[in-house]
Figure 1 (tube, rainbow, N blue to C red):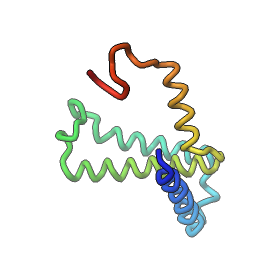
Figure 2: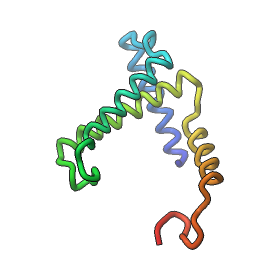
Figure 3: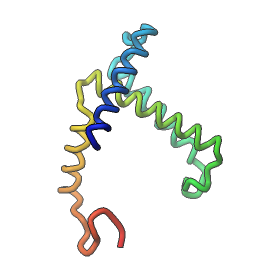
Figure 4: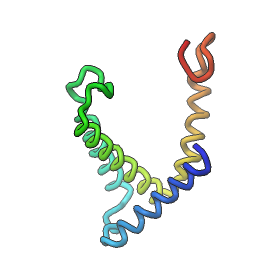
Length: 117
C-alpha cells in the first residue's frame, strides 16, 4: 500500500463515521454487530459464486459483476468500521500479517519473487 492507499483508508473511516452519525446508527455499531454484519456480507459475495465452475471473470455477466462489486464494498465498509471501533490500523495490521505469512510460508525455491515460473 502507498501513502495514498493509507489516506484512502482514513477517508473511508471518516465517511463511514459521518454516515452512521447522520443516521444515529453509531449506537448499533458495536464490534459484535459489525463483525456479524460483515460475515453476512461475505456470505452474500460467496453466493454469487456458489454454483459456478471456478468463478472466473468470464463466468460472470455484467449484472453479477456489479452485484459482486457492491457486496465487496459492503465487506470493506464493515471492515473499516470494525477496525475503527477496535482502534486497529488496517494498513499496519496488513503489513504485519504479510510479514508473519512470509516467515510461515517461505518462497518456493526456483520461483522468482512475486509469481509463477
